[in-house]
Amino acid sequence: MKFVVNVNEMPPDTCDRSLRFAVKGREGTTLRDTYYLVDPKSSPSKNLQMGYTTVYANGKTTGHSHAQHEEVYFVIQGQGRMVVGEDEFQIKAGDGLYVPFGVFHTTYNTGILPLQLLWVTCKDPTIPEK
Image (cartoon, rainbow, N blue to C red; front, side):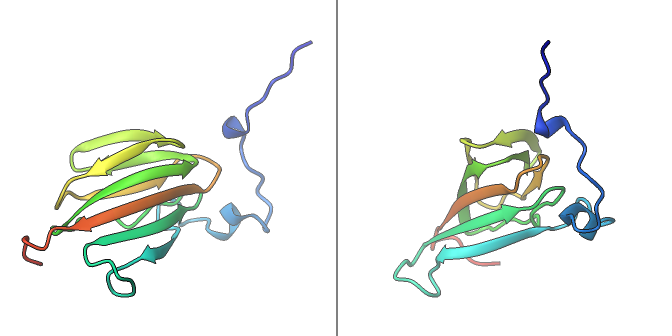
């Protein structure tokens, strides 16, 4: 007899101690934590910023763009969906991606594990701030 299940295809419990219960009604809202590891405001770097973001199940990042910065992401864990400008695509652990200067982008966690992202922005000092 063969019996195989995949945790990514299973419904979560509805226990009042679960994160999903605690954020019920907030699905698809910004549910993330970000840590700034290297920042021009607090490090020797003048143009680079590096951070680590965790997007929780059913959560997303705050959509934004930055005219003076281009950005790269590396997906450490989890799976999700990323919107970059007019493009929308699935992402998963091991993926690296690029966001050009000034392009709106946001990330959604579509899996059950926290979506962990390492990101780096690079400032072009010749582009004026808006």
